[in-house]
Amino acid sequence: MKYNYVRQPCHPVNLVADALALALVIGLPLYLPNGYVGLIGSKFSLLLGCVAVALVSLAVAYLVGRHGKKTVRRMDAGFLWLVGLCCVYTIAWLFAEDRYTALWGLSGRKNGLVLLLACTAVYAIVTLYSSPGIVPLVSDVLMAVGSVVTLVSWLNFWMIDPLDAYYTFLPERGELFLGTVGNVNFYGALLCLCVPLAVGTYLRRGKHLVGGRFWVALWLCSGLIPCGSDASWLGCTIAVTVLCCSHKTTTHTLARVGALIAGLSFCAVFTRLMANVCQARTELRTVSAWLGMPVVGETLLLAVLVCMVWWLRRPPQPCAKWVRGAALVVAVGIVLLIAAANLWQNGPGLLAPLQFNERWAQNRGYAWQKLWIIYTQDTTWWQKLIGLGADSVRQCLNPDVESTRYMILLNGEAFDSAHNEFLQHLVCGGLLGLLCWCGFLATVFWRSCQSRPILAAAILGYMVQSFFSISMPGVFPLIFVLAALTATAYAPRAEQNGRRLAGAAFLLFAAALMVPYLP
Image (tube, rainbow, N blue to C red; front, side):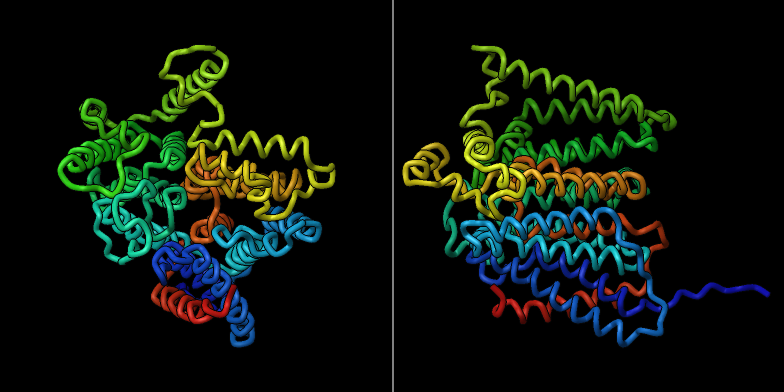
């Protein structure tokens, strides 16, 4: 007798977990209820609302579908690292000087203990109950959301404000470029998640050299141009390089990468030329400005086209070893340049951007030096272990009026965070907090390398940019969603996705109703 396999309907418990993942991926980057007034606070409240609705729905789903067959996985080591991180920050909160800030975070950051607890709950729910085969849907939705944010960002760059979000913020040209997720740091963090997903999907699953997946990947990559954040450029570059180091890489894979580089070079040069004719909200910055120079962009474009023709005219040949060797040579060269810039007195002017001092990386050098001195010299052994409490960096950097004035003199405004998530954890959560955070990232990255390399590249891209940036509730929880999805085994693409999207819409609607009543 022939057995016909019939897919079972999605269990309510699994539907809740899938809806939570989709609701966060859709809602957090796009939610903009009142322009940029209270942007971070509103996203934080939406996160809390989604988690609260998901927990209640999960309890109801267990009662309704207690006799049905549901997918439940074991909790992994990553969850233990997060539990340890929450425990460390809870102890630090008990001993913190400002307990309210340690619990809820600063009004403009919301990086308190509550954010970590909410993200840990998200990780636990998605890890335990998400449906097999849900990863492609979440990845596609995240790329679609990133594309929408990039569209708004490009429009804002050209002084077009479709969401009327600049009515109280930078009505004219401004140095700070903003999208629906906030400033360039936050938008860059979102790109570091979306670009590796889009590029990895194009490299591994794209059927044509220039097809639909190519245009999605190029569109998301083009967002790096108006963003202009060095951290996002570096994070996306390293993530794509890691994808190219896979054993599946061939010369035709490199041709696809070349097509993206050629398209990105053309976009940068065209943007620079258009900026000379049309008014833009801000000037092209750093790598974007350098790539937009006709000499650089056109030369790179021609060189890449020549290589593409060479690779495509021949049968595909494995070249992963060559890519790894070239990446190693470049990495060693960069390390040597950094060492030369900091050890060679009166060295060439070209090495000046690599020299670490107070003004390095838009004055991050000053904040990093001061926080390191405070941690090593001005804290007790107990504070070195558990930290000073969440979001306590502002008090460390601004202990008096003179310190605030000096930072304003350097940067134009006072720092209220380390602009380095790892240093932030060291000061706020101590050595134990930093250990737990690094342990969590290492666990999920290693696991994803074995099962889902594209997700591993996205997580790595975020890790790299976070070394120069700060976390915020609009992007930070997405790392926990992707990290939880790395625990799912390979399965056919999930069916009945309409129900999942409808569940996500309901969850978002219910959470949005709760936002006015949440802190």
